[in-house]
Image 1 (cartoon, protein in one colour):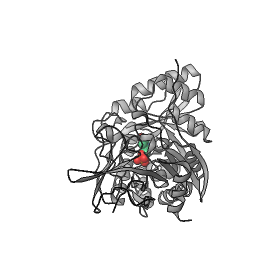
Image 2: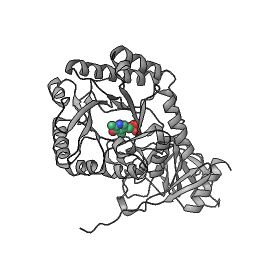
Image 3: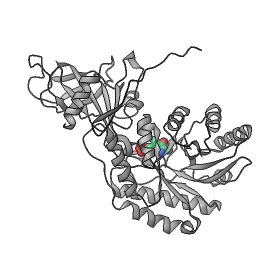
Image 4: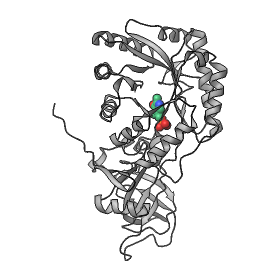
Length: 416
Ligand SMILES: *Cc1c(COP(=O)(O)O)cnc(C)c1O
């Protein structure tokens, strides 16, 4: 069966909107990333990209560990088979209750972002009568990369400023219950060009080595973060980085001369690269309308299920570029007349519910099924799932043409 026929079958069987996740694509991405990185690197999957348990489990069997930023993500990671003591718990807003739960669940490695964050962790480790390790997340100098979402290098809620060596010295001191074991950088994401990605990692290695030198800190672990790119809601494949491994090796050898003898672990993180290509969103065209010279295709799903953060005005509209899976079964329905660019809108009662302002789809008709590719990362989970109380898309996981899981999440009322 062709891939399109398979997706059409899924739509017929489970209805739309529907997210389909392809496990072999997850495995291919994990293998590609591993072979593009220095041998022996740890790869941490950033669960926030897609917390579906089967995706986490598949990545675990591919040798990826887990990076989580909430107790919800932690619970799924543990349920998917991760040993809690190997999970990295990170994020700028870890509440006492989050930390208590994480410690009680067995997490022993955290990324801390400030002196307050570390003090809180130390006090709660004392309460729980455990010891734990942490990485210090750095907010490094401004880098060279433009066009991607920068997480560092400017005033930021993320990480400890490298300019403040005094705070870093305090953070890199052993306390009664907590011990710094390394440094954590995550300077930019979705860097679409190999030279820029290499420059970003070289910058990260230089920053880490400078902090180590200034504070006389000897790291056991260096988490260089990520930035590995993936197309989002538009056609395209997984990018390869044939020069990356040796460039990172070279930077590590040049700047961390103790590396080979001290056996420091090098880790990388990725969300979108590992799962982005695995996801496809299938949606049905509910209506096609002309208004003042523009054609609108109204879909059965919108920013409530895809790119929802853009509805907050923070990011660009998703610019989804779907392809037509199948034409409508009947041809006597209104269409956009001449093939012309259409505006794709969702079912929400807000002008913000736009998946693309102008995209060429040929002739669009009511009943057409469209497939949005590359939505395995930051799709459903990064969306406004509660808005207008629409049911959420179904999620299907398939492996070599067999459906291995089907579910639909629902918001539950919790009585307090
Ligand atoms: C979100 C996040 C990632 C993953 O980013 P991608 O662009 O999905 O690869 C990695 N590390 C940290 C600390 C993050 O917050």
